[in-house]
Amino acid sequence: MNTQEIANKLVEYCRNHQEDKAYQELYSPEITSIEMSEPMKEVHGMDGLQKKGEWWNENFEVHGTEVSDPIVADHHFAVRFWMDTTHKPSGERSQMNELAVYQVKDGKIWKEQFFYDTQE
Image 1 (cartoon, rainbow, N blue to C red):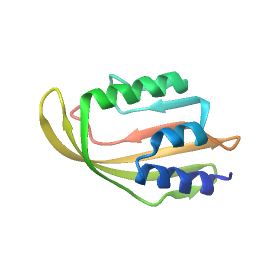
Image 2 (spheres, one colour):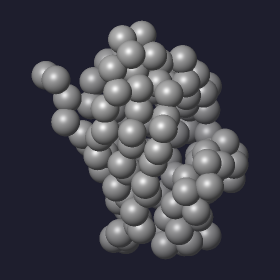
Image 3 (cartoon, one colour):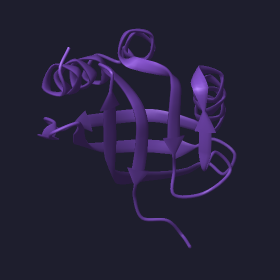
Image 4 (spheres, one colour):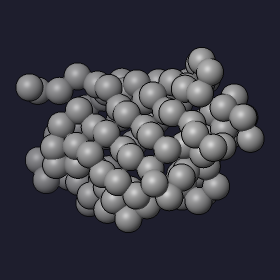
């Protein structure tokens, strides 16, 4: 698949809450995932991605999401995510926008980086 096809497929999977399928089909085993802040600021490999997902599910309840169409430029693409979540430990509900930038190498997503407002 080329970058546009990968981007379209990722958006389709995210809109249908099939992230696990996206990880299996579209991601490189050497994936690097970068957030704006700790505790999961940077993880590597599928094991790291799995631990990050477990942390997310333990800490957040998701009430709603929106996923934009992708914007593709050569071997990169960006997607905007909107989320309505409750932070489970505090009970605080909030909405956020997040810009995700992906890099494709050898037909797989091998880097993802997320940009959003933080309290810092």
